Image (tube, rainbow, N blue to C red; front, top):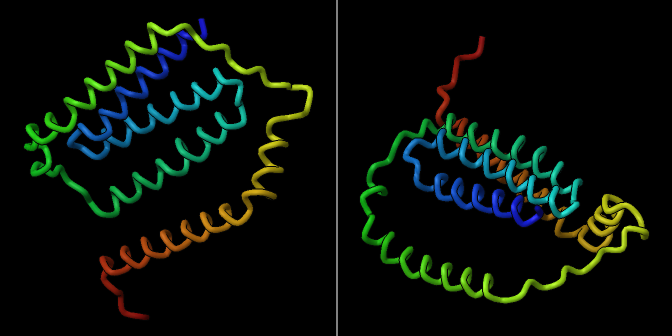
Length: 170
């Protein structure tokens, strides 16, 4: 039954990831991204990582996708037809990748399934373990990521400020 759920989630994730880059309308691409984020959270649930699933829904499906939509609305992006006429180049790159994927899939189906390692749940809560690791071992990369997001937010405000005409002071 677990393989059936994994196959469903993986299939929908792969299909919506293709839709993200295939749709000409950026709003449809963002909605495909939303569906993909929810199905990635479903994969986390099947792996018994409920905390990561909740973070996936709250951070990515909630905050990051709203940020993408805000940028699309702010920049007033329209359909760009110049990139959708390059089917030969896409087939040249995508064809060998598809063949490689099919070969790897056939090899994994013919091999016997490997035993999954068992996780000892007696040691404590996985949320506690993630928090301790994040704020001890990975504290510096965590802070660097927050600074990068701050710089990106300031850059978006500066770009948006250029577009807005200034109003005279009263």
